[in-house]
Image 1: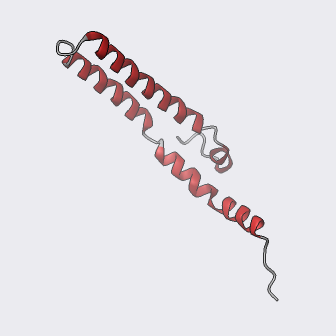
Image 2 (image 1 turned 120 degrees about the vertical axis):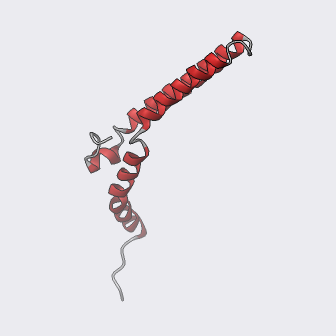
Image 3 (image 1 turned 135 degrees about the horizontal axis):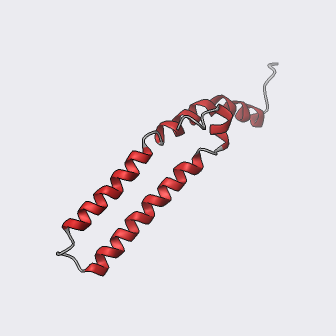
Length: 96
């Protein structure tokens, strides 16, 4: 009879084996995120300036605030991912 590992032990081994790959995927996902967030805000300002006379100001202001809040939330999420346990385990927290 073969000596087989318990399913839970096998899953834990698979998880540990894929940690470096997952950490690299997270690092690559957020590698240029700061540039993306700044570009989003820049385009928002430019489009707001173009549409200033064509839209009602409360609508334009609400749109600008919504886009800005979403962009800030995305930036905060990217910064929080630097402290993800997988990133720390792979030693990649400074490479984002």
